[in-house]
Length: 477
Ligand code: ADP
Image (tube, rainbow, N blue to C red):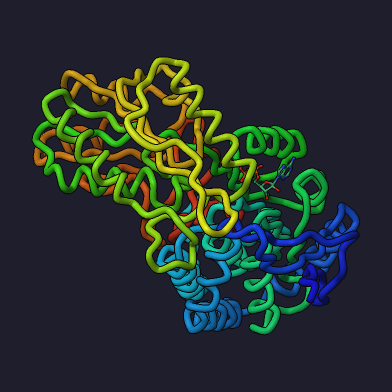
């Protein structure tokens, strides 16, 4: 059965269809999805604009109840939705189910936030005048998402957008239309009025462009690559749209001599290779102090050789396939780049054959790398990490911050002094002590600095900065 797009409260066909292919087994077609064009997208935007006046004035309690129902259904169906997600994206079942649970919790969180939105009131400098600072929905918001978190990222954009009274045009990544469709289907039955939430699945060059180009769209929240993000940011600035961009990372994990080796290796294995390294918060630069370097590398290689790479639905698998043939080709290219730059491949980096035809590769660890190498400066977005040996803590901090990105960073140490200092001096938006750089809570701000992010933070109550407009009202009474 063909899965359609959701526009103005109706399920509509696209211009054509595309199969949703399982990266663990390319013979497995997960579903067939209608591909929308710019015309479908403009219809969705018009529906969202028409629905905005009533929705923006609706009771926050009503909006909260709807989001709560969505969260409840997602949580109740976590196993089934987790399986769908693992099948279409390739992360292993436990990770996929965890992501679904996170999405459910995000909807529950913003169900509560809907009624908690409040403003401020103060005295004016003019006698007899009151000043109120109010928050209002922005209008139609365009939400453009990547393939690596097929339900969590849509959830953490859609839930706050609706909670605060905006109407939504949601464009999922082409590689993972299944989880997006399932989420849209849940929303379609949760009591959302027609036109308030719309989903248009299709190519970025058509659907994404149409959202960015439309004068009816007031704000765009984008997560994806740096190149696309910059292009969208520039277009939004030119047309006066509010914009929020979450892009790449090249996240450092510092391991000091006094680290608990077990904690360091666990953090690095998880941060660099879980979810096949396809997280913008992945630890791709392992910055290791001289005294612990050799023991750390030896332990990493041993652990990596024991990691089981296989079908995402196989309970034995620790790591699933790479999400697509194109991404696998890019990862393998970077392995070649690293070798050509003079880094030593300590383990992994090769294609793996499995009983099912899928995009499998062995997680790769480079050693004897320099921070200036391309493999340490460019986001690879795969299971590839580089170890950078440093003399001392000062050099570690300098190397950690020597990147155009600034999403997440981490340090493994027993020293309170160094942990506290690193939290102060890291140029990333999120800092972890004795934890992987990836893996964050859903109720606190998420986002980076420098080339990683632009605009207000996502998630938690900070999400209101993006999804609401501030109005200052003066009254002489
Ligand atoms: P990735 O595919 O690595 O996640 P992209 O930045 O290419 O990163 O894609 C992220 C999202 O942006 C996807 O939904 C994609 O379809 C969309 N997209 C791609 N190009 C454009 C564009 N020119 N305008 C708007 N959206 C786009």
